[in-house]
Length: 373
Ligand SMILES: O=P(O)(O)OC[C@H]1O[C@@H](O)[C@H](O)[C@@H](O)[C@@H]1O
Image (cartoon, rainbow, N blue to C red; front, side, top):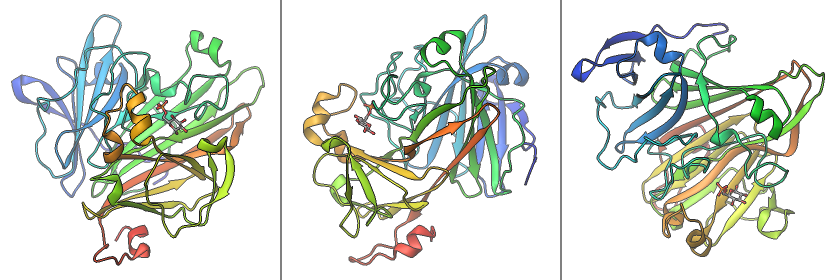
C-alpha cells in the first residue's frame, strides 16, 4: 500500500537479558534483531554491514555488524521461515570480527563459499553481491563496482515506497558516497535497498537509486544482483526462462549469440549476460526437487556465471568443488546502462521464492514453475 509505514517493532528480552526486536507476519515467519546492550533507537541509527547466513536448511540469519562512534556491536537479524527460534550462531559460523564491508545474504536458496574471506576490501564470495555502478570490468572502476564493499546504513526514515501488503517485515538500508568515494566516482547518489520478508517467506529486494548531484550532471550505471544459488549438483540443474534469448558471451569477448536449447544445462564454464529476458527465471534442481523462482522488474538482463573446475582452482576464495554446488544467476541491467539526471530515480525489484519442483520423471510444467506453483 502506498506510503504504508513499517509494521510496529516489538522490543522484548532475549536470552541473557539482551534486547531483541521482533517483526512478525501472520504465518509464523518472523524477523529478529538483537542489538546487544543497545537501545532500539541507537541500534537503528548505527552504520551497518549486512550478511544473511544460512543457519540450517530452513532458517535465514542476517548478521548486521554495527559501528558507532565509540564502540562496535553486533546485531543479529534472523528471518525464521519455520517459526523456529534462532538464537545462536551455528558453530561453523565464520568470524565477523573483522571490518570488511559487504552486503550479501545467504538462505537455503543462496550459498556462501566456505573459502569466503572476510577481509576488506575483498568482496565476500557468495550471497547476493550488489554490483553497482559497474558490472564486471566493463569500466574504469573496480570489478563489479564498489557497492558490494561499502558501509550501508539503516535508513530510519526512507521516502514512501509502495509496498505490497504481503510484505510483512522489512529493513531499509541506504548507501551514499563519502567525500573519499567521490574521488573514485564523482557522483552523488542515494542507493536505497529494502530487504523484505514476504508472507510465506519469499525474499524481496527493492532498490532505488537517485541522482543527487548538485552540479546538474547526469550519471550512468550498470547493476547486477549476483545471486549465488545453492545447488545439489550443477549436473542436476537446468535454468528455464532464458531459452531463445540473445546473450553476450564474456568467454568470447562479449560476442552476441542466441540461446538455442530448450533450457540451460551445464557442462563447462559459463560467463554470459542474457539480454532483455522475461521477468521470471526458474532454476530447477532435479536432485533436491525444488525450484528457485526469480522474479525481476526494472532489471531486463540476467547474468549466468559458473567458473567450472579449472577456473575455480584459480579463485582463492572459491573452493575447488564449489562450482558443483553453486550457480550465479543474477538479475541485472548491463547491456544498456541506466542514465539518471539530477533528481531522477531508478527502481528495480528482485523477488526470490523457493517452490517444490513439479519436475517428475522427466516432466516439468514450466508454467507451474514460473507461476510459483
Ligand atoms: O570474482 P568476482 O569479482 O565476484 O566475479 C565473478 C565473475 O562474475 C561474472 O559475472 C563476471 O562476468 C566474471 O568476469 C567474474 O569473474
